[in-house]
Each structure stands twice: as structure tokens, then as C-alpha cells.
Length: 598
Image 1 (cartoon, rainbow, N blue to C red):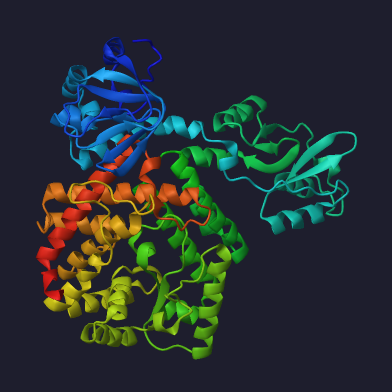
Image 2: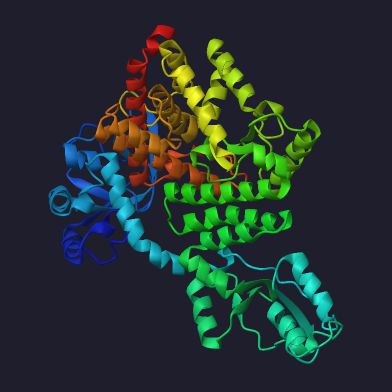
């Protein structure tokens, strides 16, 4: 077969050079007219089809299950199991590579990483993908665009400005660099170090103009240049700062510490900025960097669970620093700041709404507390964390009160377990202490767990929420899309999170994240080891798809995915993930006897 076959397309990128040549020598090309049935359901597939051009419909009877395009392949089930589950019909004129069944089966047998895409359980499939992503990650770092990095503002100041004026302007914009224009020399740059040396070493007055201090041998890079090009330019020109341009416009300043911090782990730089922050204005900049970091990390193919851990740590640092800057000393001494919901579980990536509260050791001055409530919530809102629609935040007195008042609420929530009460239990059970008297949360959590873990009927009602939404997979394990889309959160993520939460509460676990709770449930043999692994991998895969979908939407609120827009490998993994969710819901029905609720 001609060498035009793209062996970089997964899963063929798992093949060795010799295996690729064997495959290329064996494959043929097939042409199919619009409406032609390429593979018939129940048929004995003799080839693996890789689409070169055109579009192919995957159908279960008259139902459209998926739409495949160039580089997608089918039908793996026929190759492995001997019979096709669905029909594949050409929607338009279609060209396909035809890889003989016996050759593909030989490659599956001889190459475990390649074979993982065809018949292994979802956890092993995803592990194979993750290994390849890890190998590629260091290269993808260098292929990141400069515009994706943190840039200081390209702030211009008049060349006649004084040293004092320049220093004040640097402080206002929280940057150590200013640009200026000189009619004879073009665009120059002046730094805080230039100003300090002028005053301290050369005894210049602060009223002296800055033009003589500026450097006009400015090095520039384009916003769309790659990171490695910036690194080369800094090395070649021996410059610590580069001016970044979009066409003829200056859009930012890239400093060496930010570039090196990005290559070594930009999150450390952000964490340092938060720790050194002296004002809410400083934190506002750090908050913006956290939001930008999610997109940057995902473009580097960093996995969801790693991104969630990084973002969670940075968010908590930001909240703790905000608490330290705003809270009066008496409140810091007597209170514990907590975060709840997905933020508490460490599973929030895209910034949504505030879920936070305060636990007080004893009552404090009411006016002081009210002032803090309003100021703290307003600060986070200014940082880009919108108010919680359910009002689960410090501003609401229901979520900022004494430990004794919380303990009284726990008894009420268990005695009268309506939907709101059980939601409150779920919210608080996910709480994590961020700053202040962390012992208060530990005491509250212990009391909450003890009040419900022995209440079998209550726990069953609590777990019943997993039945709120259907898993979008049919009896025959095909994806069921509404208007062509699936809701990943309702159909998959929520049943896992809440089901694991119910089991964790039943067993009195203090772990907060879904992953940590799952691992502990596996250790206690509540769930089989292999099923625990599959459940965790399914949760992480669904969360990754949701994150990618959210990043495509600027609002960051989208949980929908369209199967027709996914590759065949992605659809296969999505189908497997929902199968695991379906099995987990069946387990929960039996375990908590949910059938008693009709």
C-alpha cells in the first residue's frame, strides 16, 4: 500500500516501524457510493476500515449512533468478536483503507499497547493512552504558543516621566517593566532595577527623567511564536525580557522567570505570587493566572486529575490569603474557613461559583462578622468567582455560624430528611478546611458522620439521588443521545460522585475527594479491586471530556458532548465509561435496597 497511510493516527501510533511497514504492505483502498452498506450488523468483518475521505454513519437499526469522518476507523468489534454489532453506511462518497482482519489480529496479539484499544477493559485502555500522553508531554510544552503564557502588561509611559512617576506606575500595574517611545531611538524598556540602580548607586534624584535609563535594543517575539523560540531568543540576545507583539502592536512583556516557571511548572510561580501578595489587587492578578492555567495545562495534554489537584491547591491558597487579608484578628483566631462541593472534593477545574462557609468556635461581634461576610464574598466575586445560586457561601448566615449551631442543624437534617436537608449533608460532607481553626471542621465532620452512618433508611434515601438522571446508554450498550448530545455530568459524573459519597458516609470515611474515597472503599472490599479501578478511570475520563467541552465554551458551564463529533476511540471509551456507571448504579440499587422507594 502507498506510504500515504497516516501511522500517526491513534492507535496506529503504538506500532513499531516494522509493524507499520507490514501493515502498509497489506492494506488496500476501497470506494463506497453514498448509501452503500460497508459493514452489515451481524456480518463477519474481514477488514478494519480507516476512513480516508468522506463520512460514514454508524447505525443500530434505523437509529444513528455516530458519525465517522477522516481518520476514524471501524469495526473493531467485528475484528475481535467475529461479528459486527452495528451497520456502517456511507453517508457520502467515501474512501477507506482496508486493513485485513488477520493482520490486525496479529498486531493485537503481538503489540499489547495497540491491542489495548480493541478488547481490554476501560482502565487498561486509558492507562495505555496516559502512558503515551506522558511521553509526549515534554514535547508539547515547547510547542505551546507564547500567547498562552503569563504576560506582564505592555504599559507605555512618556519618555519625559520622572523616576518617581515610573516607580509609582509600576506599582499600580503590579509589573516591574515599562515601555517608552523616543523619537530618535524607537521603543525602549525601563525596569525597576534600572530605577533602583539610578537612585541607590548613582545618587540620581527621583525627579530625574527616565529616558537616559532606558534600553532601546529591545528584543521582540510574536504572540503566536512557540515557547522554544522565546527561549532561543532570550539565550541568543542575553535578555531577561522579551516584548511580545501582535502584528505591529505590543501586547505584553515575557519575563524569564515566567518562561522558566512555565517550563518547570508555572503553578509554582502562581503559588509564590499568592504567598507574597500584599493586597487584594495582587490576588486579583493571581486569580486570573489560575483561570488561564487550566487552559494552558490542558493544551499540554495534562490529565484532568492532575489539573484538578493543581487548581484546587492554588484556589485554596488564594482563599486562605484573602481570608488573612480581610478577616479581623478575632475572626482568624476563632473561625475556620471551609470550601465545599466540587471545590472541597478538589475536582473543580473551570471556575464556577462560590461554595464556602465559616465555622466559629464561639459567637463573635455581629457587626464585625457581617462586615467580613460581605467583604469576603465581594472580593471573591471580583476575582471571578460568581455567587452561588444556592447561596452556599460565607455571605449567607446559614453557612457562617458557630460549631454548636452546625451540630444542631445536623440533628435537624437527619430527623427531617427532605431533599434540601440531604443536599446540605452532601455539601458539608465534602467540606475541607482552608484557613483558621481546622480542628473545628474535624469535630463537625465527626459529628455529622456519627449522626448518619448507622441510619440505614436515611442512607438509602441519601443514595437515592443517583436515580435522578438516566445513564445515556441502552440495553444493548449503545449511546443514547438527546438532540445529538449527552450530558456528561448528569449521566455519568454525578452518579459516580454521589454514589461513592453515599458509600463513604456509610463507612464513616474522612476522605473527601472521589478518588481517595474510591481507593479506601476498595481497601475495605466494599467494591472489587478491578471494578474500583474501572470506576475511577471512568470518572476521570468523563471529567476530562467535560473539561474539554467546557474549555470550548467561554462560559465554562457546558457539560454536553456530541458523540458524532468524537473519534471512534473516544466514542468507544465513552460507551465503556457509561457501561461502568450503569453497573455501579445497579450495585447501589442492590446495596441500599433502593427498590423499596418504588
